[in-house]
Image (cartoon, rainbow, N blue to C red):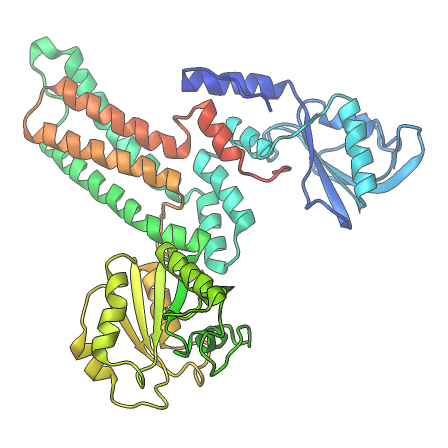
Length: 477
């Protein structure tokens, strides 16, 4: 894939389309390594010719798109290499919008290497990461937010992540952005018309309606910004650290959440000296749990290293689950222990463990220490099932009380950056409107908002942006 640098986004896309239209690309679309089958994909004007030259029994004139053909692939010496299935898709009715051919062969690295080598000798170019999907975007088969959803769909590890990716692929955020942008452009055209008739003092854009539109757009953009936390939680998971003093029951709690004896449990303090990390799926949200070394003063060099690592992990946490033993911890001591974390960690969950041994301490603790940043759970990690009060609270913290079915959601940091910029300009436009600023200044602000929002769907883009987004895809997609 050749990146063509140009200052104008429309010219950039036009040049990229010209360059790509002249090349036929090839790549292995299945995972590399030995397997039952391998799928090799081509896209470009010479796809059909390049493939059919190695399968004599399938004539080019007889090759019908959207049908599967069986044939024997001949190597460079005209010897049988492998039995293959071949399916072609005629552009624009294909994934990329170009002629596409997919070859299913046996998953031998040797066979795959030989087939790709022959195709490159005939003029095919090895595809770069994401180049097939970039061609789909450039040829109007999907917008930029949908293209990003393809990568999210491939990487999805939970039902919720899969659902969000599928919704984006169907145009979830695109519909919202296009609706907002369309209304903005309508009023912008009215303002532009006023500028054309400036000497006649004509008002085409109703100011009361315009003020209501700015307020409504701010509300919609703010809702999308607030959805970013949920989008990130579903897309990448929640970094959750379990910490506390030795013998508080941290490892027992991790084993309880996993439903398996993953971490060593002992009455000897300092058993956990390094982090133990596991992924847990809670109602479709992926939590990255880290069990850490107990926090205490120690002269043991190895344990000291583990405690330092615990502090490092806590500073990175989205959620800190602080476990304590109510039989050995007074409310005053607990308050001192968690004070340093409650203002720096996004969510602090304090777990009073061993409720089967100690009764009546919960109300006392709540009276002694109340904070909006601290959430309390009482349980017995030794006797709890995987589904308990803690998992219910963690799920609620992750989704922020939102319904996972609600749409749309700003899934990645690129969306958040664009929406943040759009919000800043909307606030500026609202201030201009309130101060009865000249029409040209208001029109300029609205133009900037429309430009920013166009960046989400790719109506406004650059070669650097496209290279950055599609460069993160796997090869063959």
